[in-house]
Image (cartoon, rainbow, N blue to C red; front, side):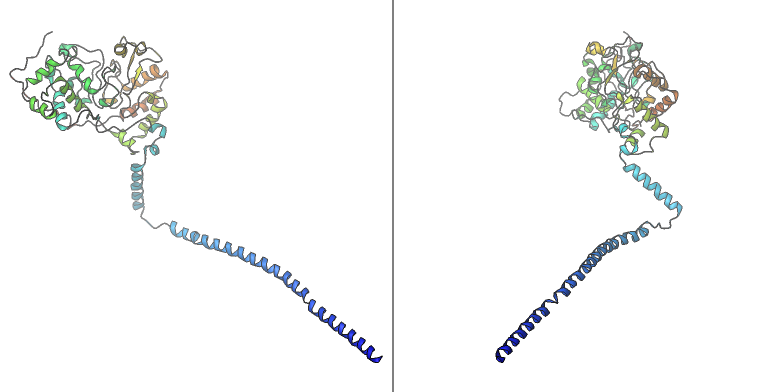
Length: 423
C-alpha cells in the first residue's frame, strides 16, 4: 500500500515540475513584444533622420550657388571712362545685330524693305558693257529729232532724276501734260508712267523717243536706230553689249541698254540703315514721323522698298481732285480707272518736287495736307505734318555719282542727219 501511495506522490510531483517548465519557457514572450514596441520609435527616428538627410543634401546643393552668387556678381573696380566706353560699344553692337522688330514696332517694320543694289530681272544681263552703253544712250541728244533732248534733259541724274518743272518741255518747246517722275529706283515699280502703260523700263524707254511732244522721233523707232548707226563710235559698243547679235544696232537693243543702265540707278540712304538695324540712323522727330505715317494709314499705298509705286489709286477718294486728266482710263478704257494714277514712289521725295501727276503742288507740307484731305478724309495737324515731312526727308538717298558721270559721246559720222528744228 505504501508503494502505491509513493508512486502517486512521485507522479504528481513530476506533473508539477513539467507544468513549471512550460510556464518558464512561455514567460519571455512578453519582453519580446515590449522590444517590438520599443523598436517602433526607433523606426520613426530613422525616417526623421532620412528626411533630415535629404533636406541637408538639398541645402548642401543650394548652398554653393548661394555662396557663389556674391562672387559672380561682385563688381570689379573699373574706371568710369572704361565702363562708359564698354557700355557704348555694347550698345552699338546690340543695335547693329538687332532685327528691325526690336528697333521699331513690328507692325511698322512689315510695311517696308531695304533697297536692293540693282533691279535685275535675269532677262537681260546687267554687264558693264551693257550699262556703259546704256549710260551713253541716256545722255544721247541725237535720239531726238531736233538733237537737243536726251533722257537726261527731263530726268537729270545729278538732280535726283527730275527737271524740277510741273510738266516737262519737249520737242520744239512742246509742253507735256504730266510731271516727269524720277528714274532713280523706278525699275522697282509695278509699271512705268503715271498711267502704267508700260510694264517695265525696257518698254518705257521706247516711249519718249517716239513721242511727238517729247523727243519727236517718228513712231516705230527705226529712224532713231538708223541715226545711231551713222555714228561710227557706237558700232563696237553695241557689238560688245550684244555679242550674239549679228546686227546689234536696233531700236530694241538700244532701249534695252538704256533700261539696263536704269536698273542700277539705286539710291540707298539712312532709312535703309535704319531698317537694317541702325537705330541711330533716324532722328527722334523722323521716328515720330514714321509712326504717324503709319498711324494715318499712309502705308496702305506707300509701302515696300520704294515706299510707293506698287499700285494704282484714284486721285480724290474723299473729295474730287480738280483735273481733266482721266489717268489710267486712257489705257484700260475701264470706267473704274477714271482719275486713277500710279501711286507716287516716296524715295527721294524731298528732292523731286513739284508733286502729284500734274506737278501742281510745290511743297511737301502742302502735299501731306492735301493727301489727308483728298485721300484720307482727315485734317492732318501742323505738328503731325511737320513730323511726317521730317520722315519723308529721311527717305533721301545717295546719288551714285561715279556711275552717272556724263560720258564722252562719239562724234557724228558723215551720214548722220542734221537736226530738225522746224515743225
